[in-house]
Image (cartoon, rainbow, N blue to C red; front, side, top):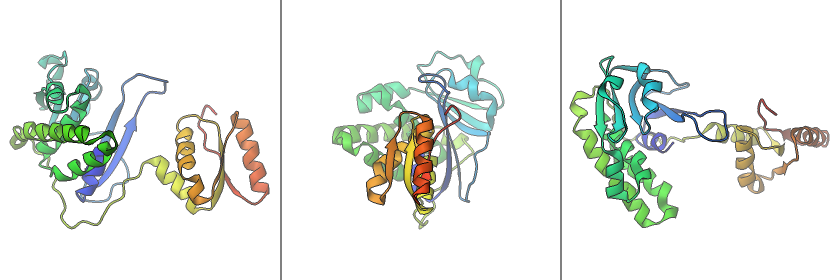
Amino acid sequence: AGLCKALARGGLHVFGLPDYYSRIRGGHNFYSIRVSDQPLYSHEEAVHLLLALTEETIPHHRDKIVEGGAIVYDSKLPVSPEQLSGNGVQLLPIPLSDIAKEKAGIVLARNTVALGVAAGLTGFDLEPMESVIRQNFARKGQAVVDGNLAAAEAGYQEGRKYATDFPFKLERIPDAPPRMVLNGTEAFSLGALAGGCRFVAGYPMTPGSLVLHWMAAHSARYGVVLKHTEDEIAAINMAIGAAHMGARALVPTSGGG
């Protein structure tokens, strides 16, 4: 999501798609980003640049990488060239973890390093990414902000080493109008408010619980009554009652509910 914001601040259109297993914890989680200088309305399966932070990422997505594309992976991962080869894909082992530890003092910052590598490879201006880093980490203190900025810059310089041979570029669009980046929950919730929703009842279940969280954070500002019920049947009954009293009501839920 941070990279989506950075690309949008660079004047580009973005479409992000998170993907995660239907379980409490674990599984292969990833985030796909499609970017263009023209409006986008969906994702696509083709991959031009794969940032692999875990070993299992590579076999999951290798066959979707287009010719000339690249796999950026942590050189600490126990993978072999034979596992990665094929389809004219460039293999870029970069010490993401080591750079993160050196620049930010924590291995978790390797994702920031990887984003810097992506910017360097594609020729994208690092400044929008730096502005997102400052915003995202501001509440954690200046030391964390500075560490992640240094990690992104180091990753950017690593990416520049391979930029000549990487054919897919992202150019910042000067004087582009400000672009809003919304996730599905935010867009859905804002649409509900614009449609006159004034009562929300629900029992937490992904992805419906995300709507409950957003509404809970904004209900007072927009005059919405929010009820966390004991089960889904109670939520439906409350919504029916609210509707009979003249309120436009909403029940966010999911298949299991």
